[in-house]
Length: 69
Image (tube, rainbow, N blue to C red):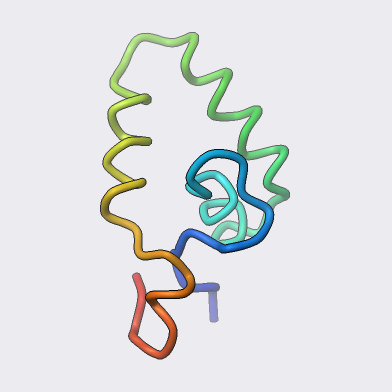
């Protein structure tokens, strides 16, 4: 079973979005951050998606026992 999609309390830089995505997809947070930074060089709404995930993803503390994505 894959890890829940939450923003972790540890190993976060700004909001923990990249760390949460890295945990969910089984990569390192540094790799996910590099992928995000490289994707920002392409046209598209990457920064807006990051902000939306920051708002929509529950923090690991608040997700506690609740079912997360």
